[in-house]
Image (cartoon, rainbow, N blue to C red; front, side):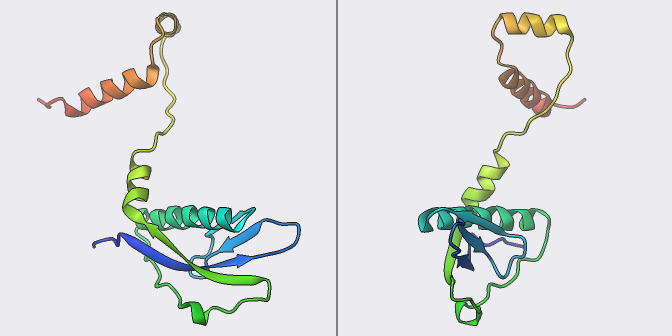
Length: 137
């Protein structure tokens, strides 16, 4: 199934004195964030929406149809806006993100490598690429 390049979902911004601006998505329970200013709240909302939808795609979950703005009920301290995310850039960023791995090596080898200023991550990445691309017998 082809995944859409763009999603647009309504977000509810909630304003309460003494608190950051809360951003929630009525169609996506659990997707929430906040920001100190409108601009920051919207930027954080965009990031939260993209990562939430990426997680749903990755887990094979059904992506719900966005509600219409006119159908969303709000309190007097709330406003509704649309937030759009461009998924190809989010997917690429998640696929290319770094992950931490713990490796075990002999102390003498670690000491020698540290003494020579070896970049452990770079060496491991190169070795893994060579291993993955090596033809199997």
